[in-house]
Every structure is written in C-alpha cells, then in structure tokens.
Image (cartoon, rainbow over all chains, first blue to last red; front, side, top):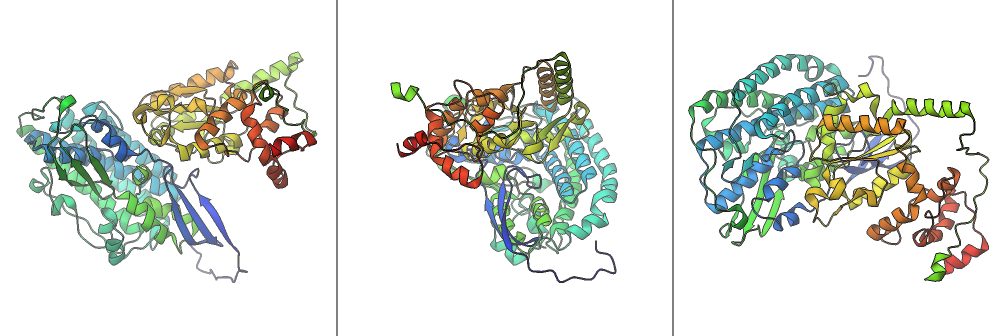
Length: 380
Length: 251
C-alpha cells in the first residue's frame, strides 16, 4: 500500500539482468525454476525451466501391469493425488467394460471432494505465504492435516492413498467415519470467517493480489487454462456439471465464477469452491448410508488381466483444473500408451511465462501460487 | 595401469593465512568442543529445497501441528547458512546436479538426510530412466528415513536421532566427502559425463580442513585439472599450477 502523499520519483535507468528464480528458492512452488529477465524489479521476460521432477511416468506406466499402475498414478500430482487415481480407474473401467457399484461411486465422490478441500487449503496457505502472511500458511497447512487424518482412517495413507482401483474402491469406510467428516465440515465452516478476517478480506492481500496476473477469457481459452483459473475469467465450465462422471449428476452444487481474472479472483473462486465442496460432502453424508451393496465389482486375475483393445479419454475436474488420461490398450496386460493431460503443465509453463511479464519480481511467486500449478505434474 | 597409481597429486596449497586447528590438545579445548557440539545439535537449519514429493510432509512437520521448531529445527533459505540438506524423495538427474552444487556450497559440518524410499534404492522409480537410484553413491548420507512417504513423526524421530548422532560425534559423513572425494566424483562423472565439474574447489577445502586422505585424489580428480586454469581466472581456487601439471593438461 502506498501512502497518500506518495509521488513517483524518476529513477535512473537500471540495467537489465537475469535471475534464476528457483529451483532452490523459497518463493517457488516445489522443485521448479523460472529464468527471469529483469529491468529494475520489473520482469521483462520469463522462461520456465522444468524437468527437475521428471520421472518418466508415461514410459514407466507402459512397463507395469494395469493394476500395478494404481500405485504409480497418485505420485504424478503430490498435493492432490486422488483425481489421478479416479481418472485412471475410470479409463481402465471404460476399456475393460466394468460396471462400478453404486456405493463405490459415492465413496469416490467423498474421496474426491475431501481431496479438493485439502488441496485448496494447502493452496491458500502457500499463496498467503508468498504475500507475507505466514499465519495463514500455518492455518492452511494445519487444517489440511485434519483432512489427511480422515484419509488415513479411510485408506491407511496420509498423502498417497491408492484407494480407488479399477472396479471400485479398496475398502469400505470405518465405523463412525461419516460423523467425523461431518464434524470436520462443521469445523471448517466455523473457520472460514476467521480465514476471511486473516486472509481473504485482508487489505494487504487484496492490494497485492488485485490486478496481479490478469488473464482475459480469450487468453485463457487459447492458452489451455482450465479449472478455477478459467472460472475466474468468467466462463462457467466445470467437468463435474458439463460432462458428469460418477454420481455428480445426482448432486446439487453451484459453479462459482468471477470476472476479473486476476490472482484475487482466482483465490476467491477457490474459496467459493471450498464451500461448494462442503455442500457436496453434506449431501454425500446424507445419502451414503442408504446405499448398500458391494464396493468393488469382480475383477479378473490382476496378474494376468488383458484389458480389451481400445482407447479411452476419461476426464475429471481436479482442484487444479481439468485432468485427463489418454489410455491405449492393445489387448495386453500392460498399457500400450498413456498420456497425462494435466492442468498444471499449461498453467505453469505458457500461462505463467506470459503472466509474469510486467509484474514485479515479488509478484512472480504469487502469480504461480494463484495459478495453483503443481510442478510434479508439469514434469511428470 | 601402474602409472595411473602414481598420481602427481594436485600441487600444494598456497597458504591462505588461516590456520585450521583440528587437534584437541588441551582439556579446555575438549570442553569447548563438546559444548559446541551440544549447541550445534540444538540449532539445526534445514535448507529450503523441495527436491521431491516427500517435501509435502515438511510443511505439516514444520508448522504448528508437529512443530519441529521445538527441536530447534527451522527452514533456511540459503545453502551457506544451512546445516541439513534434506533430500525429499526421488532425485532426477537434473536435480542431482543442483543438489551436488548446493551441497558443496554448504559449510561444514553439514548433514544429509535422505527422506523417502526413493533415495535409498530408487523406490517406486527403480526402473525409471530419469532418476538416480542410490543417493549415497553421489553424496555421503548421514541418515535415511524410509517410507513412501514417511510421516511427519518419522521425520521428527529422524531429526532427533541425528541430534544424538551429532552429540556423540558420529555424524561426520561430511568429512567422508573430502576423504573419499575421488569415489564420489567418479560416480558423479559416471552419471553426468567426464566433463562434470563444480565451481567449488573441494580439494582445496579438504586441504584446508586437513581432511585430504589417500582416497581423496585419484583417476577421477585428475580430470578436474583441465578446469583449474579456468577456476584460477575466476579466482575460485587457491591452487597454483606448477610445471608438472602442464603435462597432465596436455595428456
């Protein structure tokens, strides 16, 4: 914030210099780097430098059995692994012609929405830290941890769950789980006004985020932006509503949008999505006890499961954007080709490079966090 | 082969004017050293470098839920001031180069902890073309915390054990890097190519710390000599070229 008596001063021209922003840098999200050219402290050119997290997922998946890949896919995106499992399972089910039992579909929705809440809380924390508000980072990370506790009760793992498998889910809920989810949702609803005071309605944050990294709707569409970043530009598109998968067509929820397209709008969309996720989860909690039945359809021997020949392109709305897998089977026990269409590879490379131009160096980190890019998924 | 054994080691260092006294010769000095170890074990700074997916368990470990700061552990943004290099998960080859550069910039005593199974044996990516499998081939590792991924409690427990090791004087793998530099450099060159070299004058540092051992120099460090001239121009080394090395450079 500038004081009222602020007058701009003519500074002598500063020479242009290049700065390596990352990979060992506290402002960068994960192991990722930007080569930034600066004129004074204004960015004139940014070049994304990825590949630090490349593990060759698409090749590795060709060398493993269809069921073994379940252990591999959540590792593609670390903060939000659940959509990866679900989208891979959906693809294999489509190829193999499997019918997923109703209860498993509801459990998947429960799992997906919990994961969305966890990922958004983590992003709020990270975004707040880049604007200097470390208290909110502590809050976001700690509240996310309560969701991770639920994941642990549900699947045994805090971060990586491997809960969704082709044909259903791995196990049913433990006793009293839905009550604990309900408690957590109550807690989060009580917390949201506190978050507003500290972060979303904070003048420091609003001044920093408003106008930073502004994206128009045309730019967003031509650069392949999806998810909350696209909805912050005013386009109401959500795979959950427009191309429903699982049981999302039986659930009531809104698609929050904003029109400004800047970092503030993106964050506010995420905040509204958190509320919608809570709303969805309440519906799931109300209806899940009434749906009995198996949680997994009978599968052939997973060690010798030759999935029929074909192609599948399932898509899922993850917390970062639209997530798709392109799976090709030639009738073998392993995938012939897998392509991961992740949202972050668009957001962190072409969009971040262009949005960084003209911003000041301290806002580059904020732009990256407001785009919610996930470096492990960029590099794969 | 026999002539390869008689390496004309890199010439003696020019005196830097700073004497490095490592011998504990008096009772007072031993007490002071023990006190320094005690303090050092209770004030550890982790380098803020998220090298892999295990880094996602560090925010919960450091922030209010598990709160590593109780143990005196806190993140630090620059390698020069950091004590611990946490390798959180798989190391792709591109990252490993940065890890080695970062590690050599850190000042001793420094500790390396490998978190996640991937640093132990490659873990989930055992057949990936893009990752280095065993971290301790390239860097001396003080401690491994296995798991995919280890819980924050495990990270805490690992750091507690490291504290005990530091107090008992066992956590001295950083000396191993100087003592067996040829071995580590050989593995690095095997992975990155024979042209691999870092701007840090590790041999000069080893000499400064009085840690230059029999295995510090060898067939792999000989390859570094062609970069000596370049380093000298940049003022990065305190080693002066002597005539016997010119033959080496021509070779």
